[in-house]
Length: 453
Ligand SMILES: Cc1ncc(COP(=O)(O)O)c(C=O)c1O
Image 1 (tube, rainbow, N blue to C red):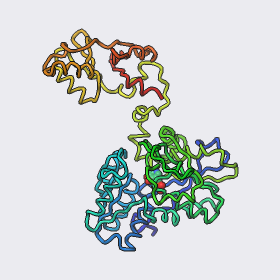
Image 2: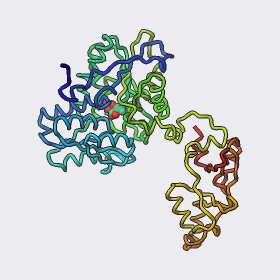
Image 3: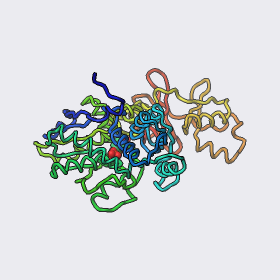
């Protein structure tokens, strides 16, 4: 019989798969190390279990203890598998930028999840770095993993990921391209490959909003470069100890839009359903085109699975809201795609102003058309509402007809976008569009801005 003694034994030995279509403009062989095949669906299973085992070995982690980590989800999943098999509790501290799916998955494997704000400095007591560190000192018999600075992270890739790549390519690998977060993957793999063949070139994929590329090129840690971005798993606003800049030959930065678009293309054109950092990594390979010769063997690593991003990069509305879908926007009906499935929110002339306020809050909107039995007869705009409120504090109990503004102009679904945008001005905040099925939708300034890529 051939079976694994537990799920941890199935980690590693992931396949190397040729990329055929997306990289057709390159003459060299491009091979992807697809880490989704690990039991926790990411490369992070490898380092998570290695970190646990090293901590057990030197007594940092004691029987029945609590493992604490600040994790964007994948390391948490790997730690959860280790915790289940080895009998530990797990607390994952995560930022609110992470997808809901990631949080639900962590809870499904028994982790307690604590969510912290993304837009705070790393030193801020609310940041996920600070919260995880603090819990590590407060909770008895606990161990704070710290994947950023924990050397076992990179060692796992030195011991497992890199030898697999070396063997699978028969030692012919010439370039390794990978997204960089904690730096564990790139540094561990790079050290091993360069020991085998110092000519192997190592490229890191970075994000806009992260400090790695500039730091590598100039030695300057530029705080002005730090801003929040969308790509998940890669880029940092700190310099983790696991990033060994001395074994990295260069970085290339990939935009949020490109990372998202290429994540979708990997699924659609190669049948490889992987995560957002894989999209960034394959786009990074294309950006590095001039560094590759026809006889080169380029290996790119895909960290995790697409299933963790179904509500994001694989969701048309999410992509459209961020201007990531290259759709042609020429007419009125193109402007309402993100809300055309939802009914128009309206108020009636005889309703009270408090009802309109309630609806503005409930639907998080700024304008509402007003109707009576004859059709659209007015409009309520939040800024007019503020003005009216400050001249009469009892406004909430008045009927809407007493404070409503002019009705919004109505256009047809084929009206060109240029005409629609001319109708929106300081005095007129929205336009209504009448669809062929006689239903109406609202077009606001926000819809017009979102359509600009
Ligand atoms: C999806 C994803 N991509 C890329 C990375 C970066 O890998 P590393 O931390 O080894 O640099 C991570 C890890 O944080 C990740 O979860």
